[in-house]
Length: 217
Length: 114
Image (cartoon, rainbow over all chains, first blue to last red):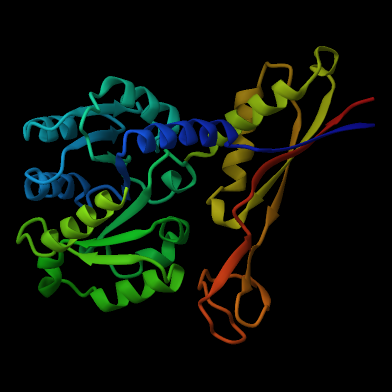
């Protein structure tokens, strides 16, 4: 009975492409974010608000990931920001190779911030490195305060937590304190922001923090 | 449902590691899957079976070894297997911990028929 010892990472090809993406972005001095969340948490609205608030100070580009349609890319395009839409046709997450192809389609001259909006899904995207600097997980208050406990891997692998739709808190049984406590029990190093894309609350703080990170890059 | 994509990656790695005369004699593929990878083993087995059907790997057994989520406390040194994903030391309650197992996703070995 012969046994071949392999000991290879299942996602080694994805990791290698992600590393190439990371080196390219580093060489261009571009700070990059991978936005992950469940569907409907407000990722695209946050991208729009970030663009509106930061566009005078930061040059941006966006990669949109969706299972179907280019609706999100159209929203970003309407703001005059370079954008590429990835349609995964059913796949539940972005992979590094898709981002690599998109980077070739974007004019990255002068770009300081790249936002990659992942497919709405709190499970699958957590294992796939895209080459980003930081994973940003977004949870909206309507999803309930127990979401971090139900999807621990995503919260463990993220660096930033945006709690969105805080304008709805008066109408919901969810406790923002409990949500934050649950998230920090999974990952004490999470940097937390509380935002609303309707009232605009918290957007300035988030953008200020982003600008600080872009300067560091 | 990223298990199908994971299964395809496993199959690619297996095929790359087989010599031409080994293609038809694979008996078992052994993989290690950490608890923090969000892999549903039944879905992975289903995906592997579906993707290998009518290929040289048709009928090959995929054996999945599940590895626990294990942390080590930076303060007191205690190693603990976590069931509930609360990332702090159950002995001294420090949150200065490292995950030492649970993130693995490896093709470990391939067993061949004689």
